[in-house]
Image (cartoon, rainbow, N blue to C red; front, side, top):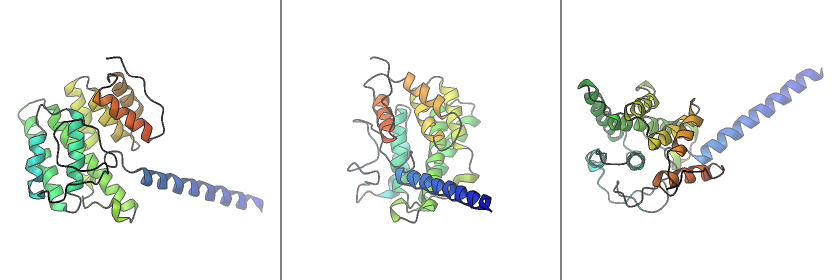
Length: 232
C-alpha cells in the first residue's frame, strides 16, 4: 500500500518542479522581448529609459510601419534590426490591427524578393524574426495574467515557421555571427540547434564588438560565464 503514496509524492514533486520552471521562465521573460539589445549610437525607433517597455510618450504610432521599414534598410546591422523589431512589437502591443499590418508588410517584402529570384537574406530575416517575436509575445500573454506582460499580437502559429526563415536567411548570407545570435535566442525556446547557433555567434564575435557586448549581456542574464571572444 506504500507504492501509491510513493507514486503520488513523486508526481507532486515533478509537478512542483514543472511549476517552478514555468514560473522562472515567466519571470525571466521572453528573450526576444524582455531585454534591450545594445545598439550604440545606431538609429532605431524612439525609446527612453532602460526598461524594455520604455516607449516614448507621444510617438505617433500611425507612423510605426513606415518608420520601421525605413529603418530596416540594407545598411542596418542585424542587431539593430533585432532591437528595432523588438521596439515595434512593444509599440504595437495594444493594437492587433497595427501589429498584423506590420507583419504583413514584412512578409510581403520577403515574398516579393523570393518571387523575383532575389536572395534577400535581410528581408527573410526581418519577417522570420518578427514572427518569432510575436510568437513569444503571444505566449507570455497567455502564460500570465499580469498586465505588464500583455500583448495583443495574435498567435502566429498559422504563419510560416519564422525560425525556418531565419535559417534560410543565414544560408543566403553565409557566415553571419549576428544572425546566429538571433537564431540562438529563438532556439532557446526549446528548438534544436541552440548550442550550435550560440557557438557560431561567439566564434564570430570580436572582443569589444557590438555583438560581443550583447552576447555578454545575454550570458550574464542567464547566469552563465563570460564567453571567450576572438581578439580585435
